[in-house]
Length: 171
Image (cartoon, rainbow, N blue to C red; front, side, top):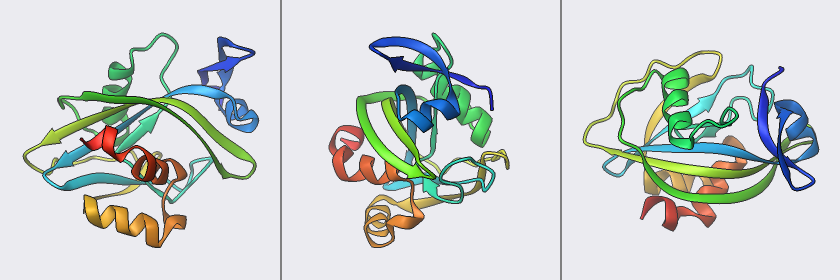
């Protein structure tokens, strides 16, 4: 894993190897997307080969932008790469910061641009099996309930988004 991502080190934004960012818990840039159809949200189950939070359910899509990559361009790129989704209208909803342990001594400490897409139909997905092992459409109220009842099945960032930032993301 030699992917370099934008992270802050001693106040400066620099390129740091992705695994090192998570080992050190460095604040870094990220992008998250929620795709909705009515009251339903598209979620994904992370592939078992992921180096952290494998097999856990997450929001529609999340990633780290490349250096100087526009957050919206990044969101569209990863929707295509992870789920085979193209052509969505994305609305920037918030820029938020969170910090959460993700297992094995790794930490996500992200300054994340969150995007939302609202559609009138459940769009089909073609997941990349190296990234995503399963997708599902879930009623938003049911998702809130599931994350509260069985948090170990969901990524820490999804739980944080739902518990602390739902109003700014979904309003």
